[in-house]
Length: 357
Image (cartoon, rainbow, N blue to C red; front, side, top):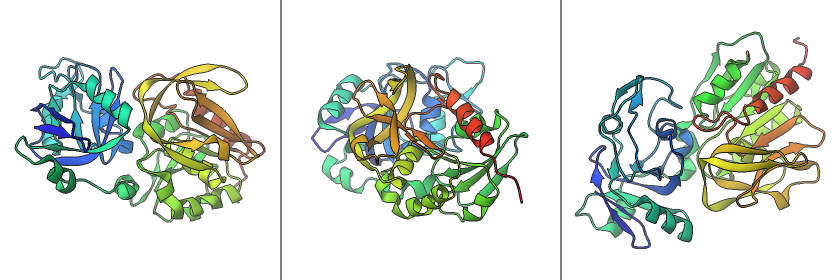
C-alpha cells in the first residue's frame, strides 16, 4: 500500500490496517504517546494522520479511555508498527482495532521526510492506495469526505442530560467534543447537558448556568449558521468558554476573523505564553486554523500566544464573561498544565449563577 500526495510524493509502506483505500487531508502529530486518544479525537475526522514517533502500537489498545465511540481518522501512517504489545489495560492490538474499524494504515514510511514535505509545501490532500493504483486517479476517487460536512458527521443528533454533582449546569455545544472535556466538567461537580450543534438547544439556555463550545473538525468559516445561533448566547451574557474550534467560533461571534495555518499545530509540546503574566505553559493541540489577532475588536483581548509561531492561543472579553483557548486544557493525551482553566470557568459560572425561576 502507498500514500500519494498531489505534488508527486509517493511513500510505499506495508499495510497493517483494513485493506481499503482512503482519501483525506494529510496532517502530522509529533506526540510520543496518545495514539488511541488521537485516533478517536473527532477533530481528526476526514484526515489521514501521520504519527512521527518512530514506534507506534507498543502498548496496544485499551477497552476504554477513548475520546469518542469510534476511530475518526481516514487513515494512519507510521514509521514502525509494533505488532506485539504490552500493557495491563490492553485488550487488542492497534492493527486488529484498525482492521475491525475499516481504517487503512501503513508502516515502513520515512515519516520525518514526509513531515518535511508537509512543512515545506503545507497541508495537502492525499490518498492511501493499493500498490498498483494510479495516484492521480486515486487522489480523485478514493473514498473521502468533504471537510465542510465534517462537523455534521461527528456532532450528535440529540440532546442528552448527563449525570453530575451539585455544581452548576453547563450546556456543551458539541461540534465533535472529546469525551475528556465532558469528564473534566463532571469531575469538578458540574452537570452537563450535551447538545449536538444542529439540535434545538436554545430552549435550554434558560436552564443552564454556562456554555462550553467544544472542539471539532473543519474550517470555522463553514459554520456561519451555527455562529448566528451562538450569538444568542452572548446576547444573554451567559458565561461562555470555548476550546479549539469553540475558540474560533467564539472569536468569529465577537467579530474577529480566522485563517488556515500552513500545516497546523498537532502535538503535546506546544508552548504558549499568557499575555500580561508572562507565564508559559506546555499544551496539547490539534488544529489547522487560527484566530487572526489583528481582527479582534477593541473589547476583546488576546490572552495566550503561541511561542513557536506567534499565533493567537486565547482571548478574553474585557467586560463580559466570555473566554476561549485554542489549545486543549483537558489534554488527553498530553500535559495538564492548563487544566485549571476548567476551574476558572466554573468559578466564573458560580459567581454569576442566576436564580432559578
